[in-house]
Length: 132
Picture 1 (cartoon, one colour):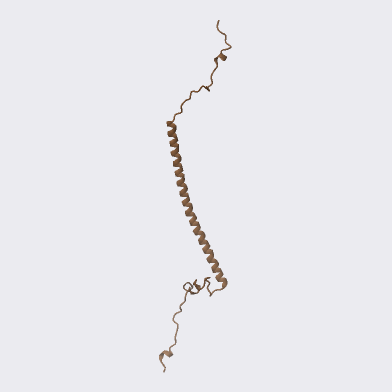
Picture 2: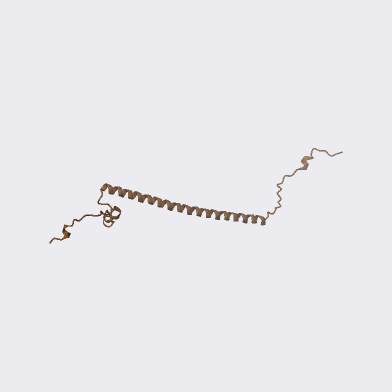
């Protein structure tokens, strides 16, 4: 029994390419913890892993820089607020001291100790004789 199907020649009409980014079975973490592609050489896998480590390190540095910037901004705000509070406190103290200085007037003490310079007229006129 011969059919027409047996005489047909099969011709491939299209070629399907599976791209590497879609081919993830060989680098699934549970099957391959080192995430090495078995289709490449060990040197290739080592270079890829090294580059991945460098990228992770760079990303960590950038994240740390962002955190440090945010922290510096926050600290600057806190320092500014503290400086404003201290300035307001100092101004308040100066006003209170000025009020106290106005309320408390210094009382002049009378002392037996005369510290003001005096002139001894007896010495001045000792050389003058009385008029005759």
